[in-house]
Image (cartoon, rainbow, N blue to C red; front, side, top):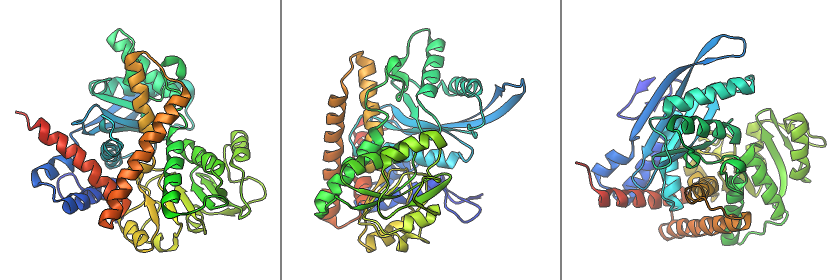
Length: 427
């Protein structure tokens, strides 16, 4: 790996790291808005990084060593907020990028959180529940100096879920000797979780698509729609876009992708997925590759998988009217330029998938107050936050004739920079 400058790395195979992409996006916004050099130096790198190497006892009695990370990018406007992912491809650079994007995501929807992220380098699929619990409790213990309800609040992410958040919360509660329900979000309802949390990210995607269609004067009834990824975000996005009238014509998951120009019923596909654990063998559909899926003709495209799916190599062949980023970092800066030139209306990740962190904020507030809202109230509040945030970003984009990603980054950076100026530099 080649060192470029402080906080930057380039992957040895000439593929940019997610962190470098996040910094490029920041630099573009900072230059456009004329941000002071001292604030650029503060905001383009993480505040704190923790790498832990820890042992876990497996079911067969052996002990395996794992590596995990927790990164806090910025906590000027509030506690760090960000998920924990379990994936064999987790790297420190990826976690740095995700933490930075969380800072801007929280700021663009104007909730009082900063950005953080965590991950463990592990393939959890062959692990038993006991092994996952041992891994989670030991990782929680290792990162416990950083996390807390008023300091850094984890949540589920790739390959983590409500149960893992319950184990993490219980571990920290055992250390402190009291219930720490607000230390995580995305928990089970019986432990202080929030109604509406599991659907929040996908619901937020659908709100953004509806707002974009309204702005573009586009009818969503029968609009061909492709969804890449059929996990929590992708499946909920597909269901809710289908309920808005969109015709879901293509869907993919980690095992493959399917296409049917006549439409795919995502409600039936969810039932099929529960039985087979994949969309790839769903009947009456053509099998396509993940890259072919992105390039199929459609009006709405929702990349809801992993980072860097749309690049300078394939962006010219990707031409939806609306590209709604359900995943974090699915589009590279080179692709952004091509998409903007081709009049693709890109709703950036820090806005489009902010529904999850918004309802996580609602969960945190409810836990702190020990007073819980019904789901109708939560969805009403979520819609207000997402619609008003979309309007604020889009108005700025149209006023300056710039992409929504640049407009969203500018709005977010302005808010974090202003909080930094007001607080001052200690000592």
